[in-house]
Image (cartoon, rainbow, N blue to C red; front, side, top):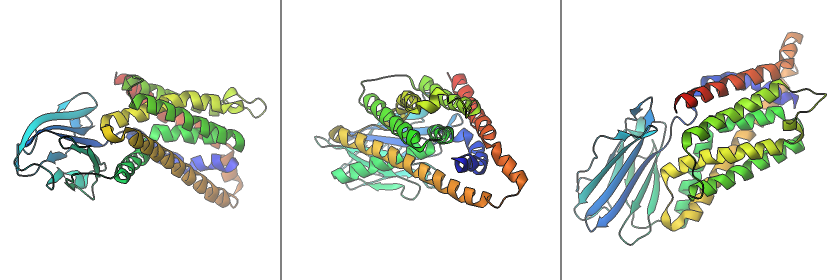
Length: 336
């Protein structure tokens, strides 16, 4: 695992530069429900960006009045607006637009439900800001939408990825590393399902703070490691990974609860979101391993001074990871 320690030298600067980005760009959410033939209830949620609402707006078709909502109100984590729209001749076949989304680095989940029909779910991005409202949606479309959301969520969750990265640096045994990653996956899958289905409810801020604390813990373990005396986190890393994985799953569930699950396809959407999370995690690990392999091959040609620097990679890694995670922890505790 020497090459994995070397990897941190190449990625450390990038992680420091992106440390403030953990969960910064949550997706927007537009929910439209038909309550009478031409009357619709609209709920619009847009992300918070440094204390102000993101510069995006949901615009209904011109046959709706009003076709844009009131000024949103903050709940501390996002900005919400509710209104009732009267749409002559309905919305099926009409176009919904998210104005300003084309210049943002996020996406918007749209959920639309006609009277006595299953809801239709779609995802809008900076490349596709307009939705032609369909009357029905296939099971495959629901699964794909939520799988993509799960994949993007884990790749935007730098605290989750840094936890996995710290596990890779800490655990030298390949067999133990596999068991640890498996335990982490099983644990966060359990709490993701329980929380998303409403069986477990814990406020988001404490969960996010403890997730940051879990990364601090692994950073300390990296700094205190001793080749002669393996610590518990190295001897049985699956215990640590499983325990903290339960908390990370609650973090995933928080994002999923903000988006919502389609009533007619709850199990499918939940499964697809979790599969997306796992695929994102595997993609991250693949990049880590590939970059580490390339760096290790390059290090064979380095001079003695560079080799000495590599010998201190664990120290550099532990302090860098700990610094990033401590900042997150302080920021989230202050947010209480």
